Length: 494
Image (cartoon, rainbow, N blue to C red; front, side, top):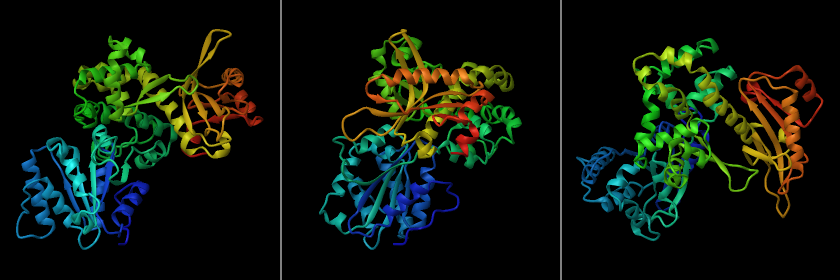
């Protein structure tokens, strides 16, 4: 089977398309299973629909329905796909899965069950039924070359399909995650060439493709001077779908039941309370009561936990979806005024909160992603394996230093300290100068004496959207251990 070219309407996603077409074009006998997951609005449905169309396969989008209705809808779709005289009668799910396997008797056939969690929640034995249908040696499987793809946006549910002792554990030949676009790809997708403007837009909408196409109808800021007006008309406008999207992201995930509690947890993190104790203090709960909501929000892809690379067992939480950060910091406190269409007033008085709670943390994460994904090997003197914020304690002075970036190299093959490639200071709205470099140098001196890491060759990174003093630029031009990064370098340079 010839692997089809990616359709022009699919932006980027070259890796995902290559994996899907490899799976679909497998000529070997025997039906196979693949699982595709990712948060909503990332383009999974478009990918799978176009894959099914390009390979003359079968696509079925499930809805919230009873098992009987879902089987009836599936039978209707199968009848239309096979040009049968009428709908195919499917008495139960075992017969339905065998009917899907029968589609691949003559050739490899892509079969997509999109929104699979809807089906599985209504028919809880469905994963076990699929497990049985794909039993090695079973004639219905052996005579089939159906390439069955299960897709869903409920990340906690989809992750559990293949975990531990789950029925489908070990059955999948493809486990594909469709993530949001990275910050560079998102800038290209939005058609924004100005790096600072791209960073400001990304801090609000992140890398979710649907937010440009369906949610703002391709309304893109017409240059830096149009950014404020764009926020008001596209994000803070009750008539636009993006206005309520952050609320829907929580409401539509069936695993998020106590919505008020989850909103409070996210608000605490958006206010800079990244530790479990800080979150508990903000929302008035005991830290021990937060285990479940934190795990659920992590599993749903809305919270991320960054380990403190300098303090074992410590970590900080951050919101993984920029739009939720923006909602919690800017929109939620002024929701009534926004519903009354006072967006321009809200935006004018929210500038400091946007800069400190949204843009600043977003820029810090962009710098960390640059270190991990885009900076060339020579920039940091090695491969950056982990990059996160950290707190450095100085026992002698009983003080602590917050580091916006700690970049560790790959662990050594044998015993020995792990290479510390860089530490960094990141600021969006402040010009960085020689005192900032001196502070990083003192922190490096402390780390050189610290066991567990080798900081002797650690580089000092300073990143700012506001620029650098002439003195700092002059110093950096004569030192190989100093890295200066501005938006131009983060978005287009090396």
